[in-house]
Image 1: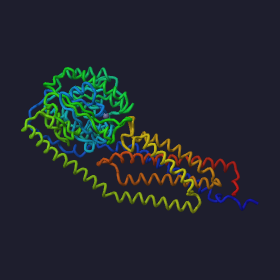
Image 2: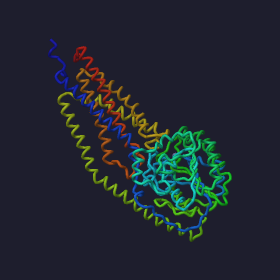
Image 3: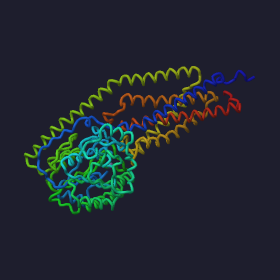
Length: 579
Ligand SMILES: [Zn+2]
């Protein structure tokens, strides 16, 4: 009697299930691929050997007199400009010397800007773009210039990373050879394990061929140990002492730059630095205090927000002109300025200038420094410009191919979908798609824009990998989409149609995310010689994570549907009657 009402899906049942399983496999492959690309995105930003490292440093000795017997370069990690005021010791230094500000460099993360400060090369050109950089920096540094001149260099920190970041061939100021670097790459030092301070003081080079760039490097837990280690260095004889305080940044990440805890950490750091420098004789020695970056109000840095870019630049003591102010100072200007205080040539890969307006140089000496800077800058800028131009040309030359590849893939997938629609194994049900597909995007990008802080690399209050937080947002969004899909599918008249509609969700979800990720890849392919801007630094990994999440979601939806389908078919549940 009812045979004529046999559900229309009986014929293509196997094909519907086969299509579902195929999409499932495709989704799994897409998820793995996109997940891997998203996971490696931060590492793809890094350059082990940037263009500048492939040319010899441009060492220009202007032969100016030494202005300070010793220089103390203090970097208070994450101390933003506005919060650096009303700190007793820093304000005292300001009164006796220079009260100025400097601009950090994008991406405003720590390791990239330790390198900006110590080499005069910003992240764009240094190749050190994130905190994941794990090979020794190949660029000429302040430590190299000082040691080449026979001076002694020391460091004390509660954050043990500088000595390893600048490992040198034992007994030289030369960076590791390509062979040694290969060994480093194969067996990188686990710099990230050092995010948590190690238990024992002192820094050992783990590799016999490579040595610390500091004659004396002391790691000491915050805060008591730091004061002790720093005071010991201050009482010693090193010509250049680099002090790095990590505790303020930690408070910023934990509580935000607007929090009382952050202010308190800044005050504690101020007192610790005051203790370390208590006996420094400013008549003979110079002190420079700065930060690698600031913090957003909610905590976080990496982007180009004013509160993240602006850092204090305080200088006082021998060789510093009291009351002077720096003009458009950047962190890359510190290495040449410290060099001038110690009568050293500026580090030879640097892209910054000597802040001569702060220095007690006579007119002739000032002119010599400026001339030396110009010679160096002509050489280094030419190298960077050539590398960026050639990389840009390279990207442009293959862009059309990549766009064609993405468009071709999309067309192929579209043709396949048409074929499947004709065979009734895939349905693009408008109502279903309107509910289930936007669910992921709305929740995901909504979370990024609100829980994250705008679309900026500063979006993470917590330290860590951008992609890690995105995956968390992605998982939440996936859950929403899964529920929305199941809800939207519940009213499908027959089991076969339900599965065909689920196939439609799967196909659309995969396509919409993959085409976006494909276009991003077409326009911004790795390796990133030219650094993507702050918006892209967020959107590229976000799009990859979206593909991975959409694909996993597809797999989950379809797996559920296949189970429901199989269970009902097995139980021979009669299909509902058409109205
Ligand atoms: Zn930092």
